[in-house]
Image (cartoon, rainbow, N blue to C red; front, side, top):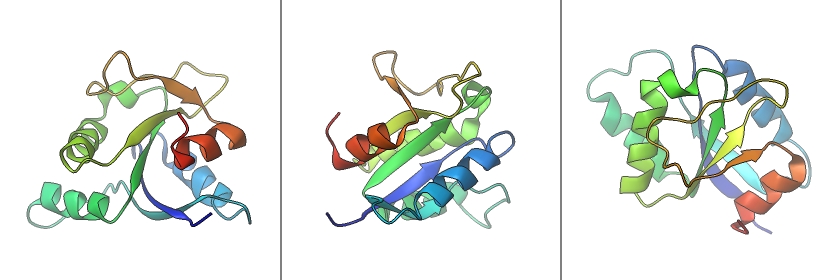
Length: 129
């Protein structure tokens, strides 16, 4: 199966470690995805939303890593809005199994937050939701 290019949305202030774990997991030989870009902390010069939009356009899917403070992240809210506008599918991935993970404010109540397991990740990337 070809590798799917993904954009990783995460709360840079609280969950950068989750992004590193996901990128590490992407190095597995049977991984179905390639991380092409991800959220950034530093201010983007000029219209940052246009730059994020360009990054999301390079991806076929968006993975939203959810942690304890995801509901306070304006960046994640913007990235989800852009993913919808660009018609990029996305899914919510629970970053911690031992902590209460919150949903982005822009996620609809009907959107499921999936447990972060290798089998779930592979199914979600392949589109078998």
